Image (cartoon, rainbow over all chains, first blue to last red; front, side):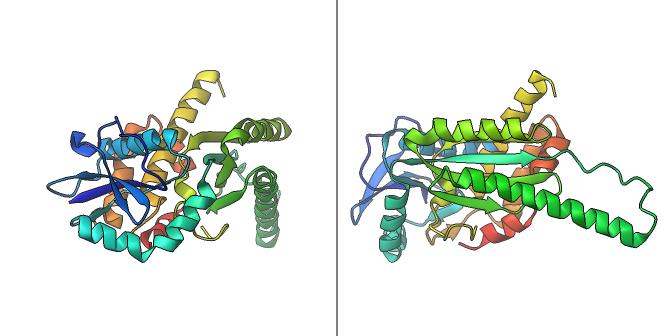
Length: 219
Length: 73
């Protein structure tokens, strides 16, 4: 079985980080694309160790290659022929997405709101209570959108995931490699402007959230 | 929130973001699925044990819609 770590535009240097189950990571070329893979007797299990190893290999590749598409964990290929067939099916799309992420990294942002205060009994009727809750939801949604818009303006592409009552915003931003400091400064400005919120910025990540090539916002 | 809490939170968020990316994002080529949706859920159960504060994970976790979306390539 073949486990795929990433698709790259050009063959990068040998990957020193060993792969799942300590298998060596090899490069395999198909139609001008370089595939980082390792070979296994059986499908690798979905353990934390495997996930972290997969991520470490992708990270090591992304540090050296200008354009890399991390592969999602949990898909294996019977042999090289099966892998090559899958790559050829999507060859044009893969090339387009590689062009879009070249020279760029991903930053993650999560915005946490304090849980809504327990509703005081001042809401005399069910109708008042519902209106108050609705107003609160609308305000939070507006705040999340304002923060997202400010960050999206600092990035070239963005993906926004579903939110929850406490997770106001969960999103990924595609930023030029030399734009990380600017982006973080914008995050810092938002933190100062909204002291009641926790704004957590992670990364730089390899462009996982932009590797599938879905249209922006459709995530 | 103290600095230590803030640090712990940052570490947990980073771990969660990493696992979310490896399992739910990334390019998908048609191959044999080796990790089912149920398998993905099990990974999160394991992760829950690893994180110091379950409350933190629940607070941070995106709604299930994310996983449903991720199921289709």
